[in-house]
Image (cartoon, rainbow, N blue to C red; front, side, top):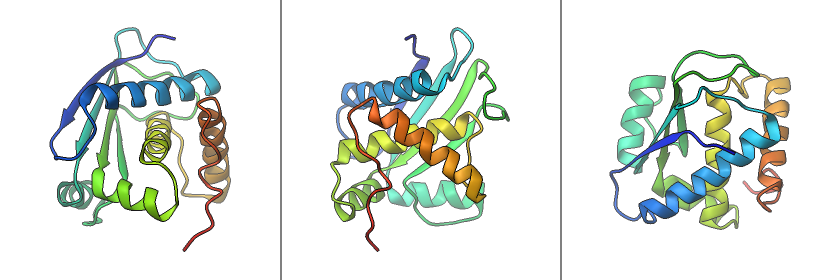
Length: 162
């Protein structure tokens, strides 16, 4: 499968090497694209920012009015509905190291599996998937589970902790 041009910025210490991040995210988005039939324009771009909780809280506050850290934020290049092909700019994904590490530990998952899940989750948001309503959440979760299964990663929602 052809993958989009992936631009990576790492602005926080502690993340794996750029090549490892590129490989992990590429595999995750390919799994999502192949299992769900996601399409994009030839030469399309995807930007990834790997940051920490402090900067994530600022971004989340600025764009969503929620000045706290979160695991991943998605910024589509254009508004699209589920099933729509992406144009030249697929969008941006922002990941926060401390939150992802903490969640992985709490949920007894490897950091890599949790990051792959969040890459799929964020990528689906760029293609119109959402989880605001129950039916949307069920559709999105099923799509994530399907994509992750192709990577040998179990159901990320099977965790029943606090």
